[in-house]
Image 1 (cartoon, rainbow, N blue to C red):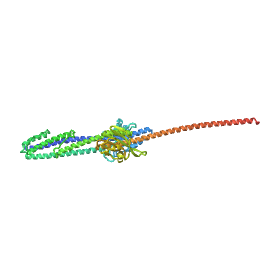
Image 2: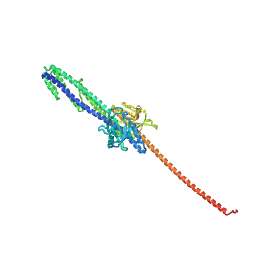
Image 3: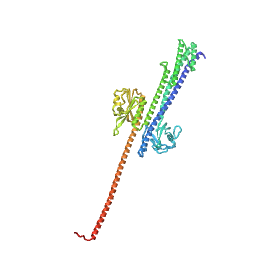
Image 4: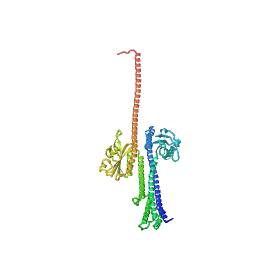
Length: 568
């Protein structure tokens, strides 16, 4: 093969092979990182769904537990049937979610309540149509009963048709055993929304990778064409210089570290030498940058060869997108951890409103690392109408403040927040704001956020947080999300407290009725005793009268027998 042809071939190889090698390495690293991120995203979404499902089921479990205790304390019957009826009315997950309750008999439990299929009540769930458990195709009710009896609760994945469609969809349920009654309360969610989110993320990453490949191939083709044309016209005159460059290109083709060519020519050969040197430096820079990105160093600095360096700019875009994805993942992890923490606080403190308020505020202030906080709850008048807000808890510098205070609805920003039912975010704080409406102390914060506690379109109170740092949008979204769960728990606790007060009033009235019945019984016994005494007295008087009658008759007979009596 002639030197001219060799030069042309070597230039082609020196341009194509490194580009393909770098492209392959970069795409492999990018794809590996993207696959790992997608799998982690799937796991995060699935974990979040399981936590939410557990929280929902815990609410149903709490309702059963409260009603069972009330029935035992009041010695009344029928309370648990009413409890099942209340559970059957509850809906969540945009109306698709509901509760069902079975007993814990094995191998096949009996349905006690199914919110969507009330006709199943009382049926033993042994039908083969329930053999839809995902991993082994076992009876899902049997699996729930066995796992709940063993460990108290159970996550079960199974496959079933989505209501109203012929689409077979994966679904996950969470069951929890209430041992005093042997009841298993369950709830479930479809997981198709997770698959949709994962597919969307895959499509977005695939588009980015495809764009990078197109740019790399385009640049490689342009450089290859230029090199071939130049080598064809100047191969004869530039044989010696090209031979030197050939050796360098061979080294590049082998993937080795290549030093730059020393050349002082001012003609086109010199320009090619300079271009080759630029290419060597650029490829080394790309390789080093791709290596750092592949090792997870998403803060690695990189400067493109020029403003028109398409590959360099796309690598920067790739780095920024990966860094953004990692930041979003960290924010999701932070939000999930905070929601799990607040969920645990809400689950632990669901019997006393005051204690619940203090624990909620303490946990929220510490997790958000803000300076001060307050929690207000709406108070009701004797007719049950909301009229004011009571300060239930304050928190500042790790100390509780029990400064009781009442704010009318619509008074100040706190009262206005309840009326408008929207978050209020203050970035410019008036000097007298704290002393007038917040009750948070005397320091002037840099920013204040006021979030209403709303559940089922009913306002239960307000959370007010003050900080010397700005609230980022993701922190505000977290507070608003947590506020929904807090409002739901407050609603449940207030309902339980009202039920407890009514029960105590009922017990007090029952005791008063018993005391009145005892007093009436004693009065009746005294009346009976008095009546008996009067009856005996009447008998004695009758006997005395009888004696007197007989004595009178005897005296008359004696007078008649003695004849007339002489009167003196």
